[in-house]
Image (tube, one colour):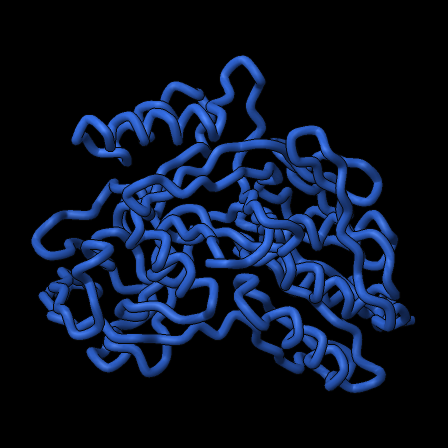
Length: 387
């Protein structure tokens, strides 16, 4: 799986905001989230858990408070309480990590501009180099092998750990700090020192593939991405069908995913969700383009808020979904601020598509399976829809 190096287990906590519905998403480094203001508490995503194994927010905060009173680490106490829940998505994050997550979902990050994935043989391969980044300036290319980071060998490590090493310490790895990479290209091996920089993410790109096809790729639902999708649809040639490319999109801000849905729907239901048994719903805004041919392109890296959007377009008959089964992440967590500023996130519910399908653990099954040459298959399907 690949993605921009800043997204190291991102979560979303909007200070002073109302309740935030967040669906987790895994980018190269771990889980990312999205938010939807609805009240004064802030649920975020995770995985389904049973009542017997659930770690309740009050239990975790009480454990953290007791540790604080005894002069111990509230974060470590919370981590112990969370580990007993048996839920793989329950987690505790430091203050610095949470602040990084906020920045990442606002479309900014501190890093070197590399995307990477682990190959089947365990090697780490550079998949993308951001234009104008320190990595681009150093001449690093997609396809290069990443062998080490600051002397630590990375072969066989999860991409999450590799990204954490690239970013360095959550607090100390500011713009201007250095990181030394061991790289390999063919028979050439070398070491390259880079300085981290403040970078921006281009989460949405639009490309005219032909007179009849426009591809809109959404890499993540960062702040403002929903409006960018809507503008891209409006600016596409009138006779052009749309391929909405959500491959590798591990989610983001749910509000942005709903806004993106509003580009193709004339109002109506996008998803339902529950928090501790209370049922709620998300609706698209009216006025979307409901006639333009549309194909949603997905894969196993399509997660969370991106699955929410895919499920809505599929259930409501608005798009033909092409690709491979999506990841299957659709549960809701509640973040709780601990006494030392760290944050615990615990699963409290899940969401469903307009037809009532649960995504969590199941994913979205495409209407047309396509692994290799998926984009070409999507073009073919789109051309057929336009006839």
